[in-house]
Length: 117
Image (cartoon, rainbow, N blue to C red; front, side, top):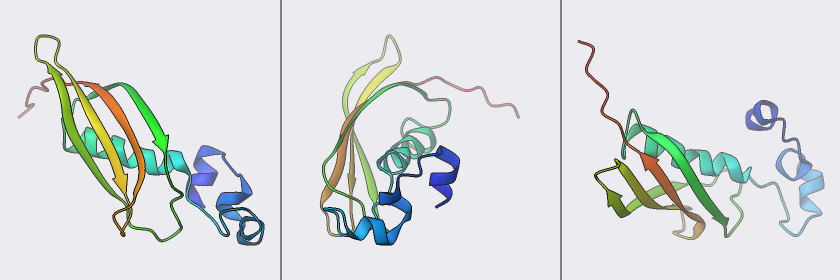
């Protein structure tokens, strides 16, 4: 419920089990944007990594993420504009069963950060 507090998205589908049980989902589901934020973590930490500047992201939410699901993020380079230092990546999130729950494309500007040592 920390994400609900920080984001101020207190939709009961995310935080109230009794309410969520009465919905078509049959129980609580994770905030979609919380799942999408895992993509940002991969882009900022791994590919392209530190110094990345997020220019855009499309998202398609394909299936609910349940409380307790394990999500894996994968990214694939679709195009690279080396002259502009811009990369477009396919971004996918799958659950522990291998089901695709979120897909999209990210556009990132990558910059070289000088070593301060």
